[in-house]
Structure formats: structure tokens, C-alpha cells
Image (tube, rainbow, N blue to C red; front, side, top):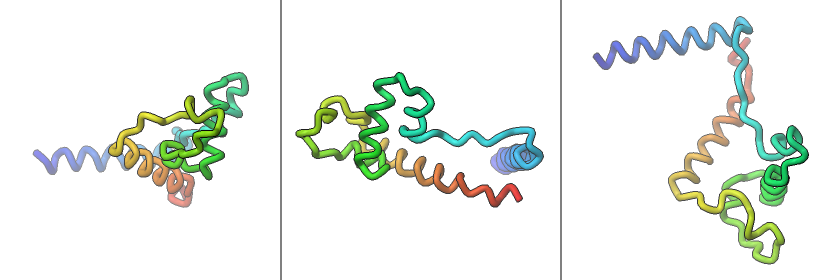
Length: 107
């Protein structure tokens, strides 16, 4: 039964990569906070997220660890309630996003 699931999963992955290679599907790459703010310039929340992201050297995890208590955005900074497990999920997502920018697999 387990091998049956693995075979179905492999078949689905192959179909997905074939569709990407043929151009039938386009891979969706998540936007970082700065790109989101540029797409929606009237959003105050997006602007705050982008500024905190920029100030933290483009590392979302660093925003959660922010110690700049004299910053006017400190009390409203994003990602304050991140738990330890969520922080690790963020790190993995960032690594996956960065590695997904490599499109050499499409060639």
C-alpha cells in the first residue's frame, strides 16, 4: 500500500514537471515583503512589513528577533507572534524560495 502511494506521488511529480517544462503551467514563486509592497503601494501594512524586512537585512526571522525598541515601528512590526516551530518553517520556506529561483531544472 505504501509503495502504491509512492508510485502515485512520483507519477504526479513527473506530470507536474512535464507541464512546467512544456509551458502549460508556470511556477508560482512567492513574493518577498518588498515586492508585495511595490505591487500594492497604498497598503500601510505592506509598507511596514517591507521596511522591517529591509531593516533586518532581508531576513524575516531577524524581524521576529528585533531589539530596536526605540524604532517607531517596533510595537507594530510584523511576525511578532512567531513560535519557535514557525520560525524554523520560515527558514525552510526561505531556503526553498531561494533554491526555487534556480530554473536550471527546466532546461
